[in-house]
Image 1 (tube, rainbow, N blue to C red):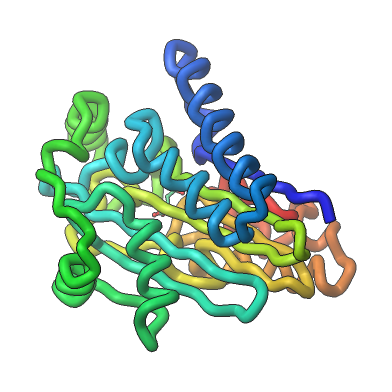
Image 2 (image 1 turned 180 degrees about the vertical axis):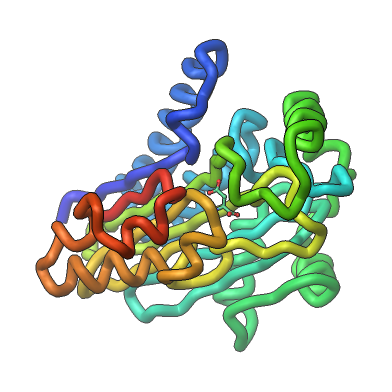
Length: 266
Ligand code: ASP
């Protein structure tokens, strides 16, 4: 089977002209890393983790070191990963001071009996696993400081559903053995309340992978995506052979997820 990797950097419609080329190059780098992993016989899980790690390390994207800031000017990140071979998954939410939340999500999937760790438990697990702590300022960019200031001047935290600048990162992959996987990682939405958790770490919303159907990684307004478990819903329609149901304009469900700007499937 020919391996495939598809990568997204979220928020494509809002990328300013001066950033476009840097963002494009970042996506190419991530897709290349993911594809090389598959070519060398790596699994779909290895490929999506590898691709998303590249995007988390790139300050152009809203994940890892490019994460948007919460109302207090802090970075709190969410991530999840899923193996379509056995439906195992791992997720972390509101994690701080680590470079690659997607790696921690994978460790949750593979090294714990659980699917999801948060808060102090996630931090302790990261330390136990030898994940290095990074200073918070290493994750904060000048662009995101300005972005938060602008957002605060324009609206209150309660109105974050109005914001336009979304941009989670994600990847889906199909390996040569026919296994699929997804990985999604984000800093969330700018000016969010402290402790806010979006769709990204919630399996079924932030993504889904099932060898019998396909794999999806979502990006868009988390509170809207969560209403319909968008990734699982889309895969359900694909499973039924009703692709048109997933994207039909004017559909009431499509209205409910009107702020969703992107999802991908294999
Ligand atoms: N889905 C992310 C969230 O709501 C944001 C995004 O995709 O840009 O946390």
